[in-house]
Length: 385
Ligand code: RFL
Ligand code: PHB
Image (tube, rainbow, N blue to C red):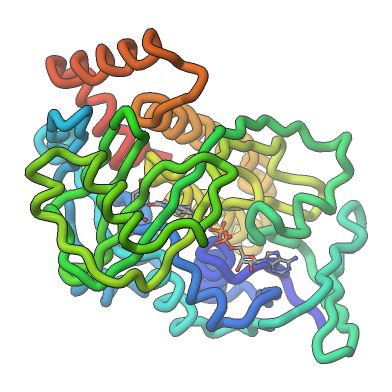
């Protein structure tokens, strides 16, 4: 088999890249380790920046997003029960759209024209410095795909980044001493907008997927086990971390999904090694506090698609040569913002009383400063490419 671009991973990054390449007549094949149902069953992000919505439009897959997505003009921050609304539209003239990653993935899967090989085991990347090719095993048979380039869109635990010799990559990492315990429930959201809450017992987030489906998170220690959290225990803990009126308004029910995600900041540099380009979680991770992970994956592949279109259309290598530096500049700004939101809103065991007073001062400063709110809003709705 032969293709122009071999894409590893059928998450949002791989599927969006494949779609943009298909629309521009660039042949591509996606290799995915899991089944399509498994990929669709992963409950992850929920907030799209305008840039991601624009990319869905460009990919001609935004119809359902526009009819079902919820446009949010602001968000609520709460600190020990005191509320502060950040008015995105009033502050920076832009908004975000609540539309689940599952739905983004489904829309892209439904539109897919090129070949996707699901349940491809033992994917291996070869000759990245020469004539690249990819091998995998399916139903006990080994296959080979020759290609011009490989796009590593296979997430943090994927094979692509691991295929780059260690000395050719520099990695930067911060592991936080806590994770998020998330619950999905078929109940209306507690508020119209998201609530990011700081409390002495830890962070909590009230998010949503639709007018009838809500997503809630609480900060838990890294070693916590999901089996120790009955629904009842989760709701009790969440209520404790919210203001009295929010806790009162919370509508609970049986969880339809419950899982713990660790929090991490991570960047690998550069994003290119020979014929291999890294994009999305394969190249970087942000803690979910700023809602940036999926959006960064989208902006990476938007840039990478443009670079391939320039290469195959105009025979110019300028775009693919600049991809790494251009994407990293945006990535580091999102890393900074996600780290800052995480630092403001979580409890850190090592911070002590001084650290909590500093967090409170930061919240009070935000509450009293339009300039500070503008900085938050500008980053949350998404910086330009
Ligand atoms: P993905 O989604 O991990 O997809 C990678 C795909 O590659 C496959 N794969 C392989 N395929 C072949 N061979 C191999 N060896 C392979 N190894 C892996 C995997 O099966 C998978 O299908 O990466 P991608 O496409 O880069 O997308 C990134 C996003 O998924 C991620 O950044 C976001 O979900 C992060 N995130 C959020 N981002 C936002 O923008 N807004 C949010 O509100 C938000 N909330 C979240 C989040 C992530 C969370 N978790 C669980 C980490 C909330 C949570 C709880
Ligand atoms: C979510 O709905 O899953 C979500 C929303 C906002 C975040 C993180 C996760 O910052």
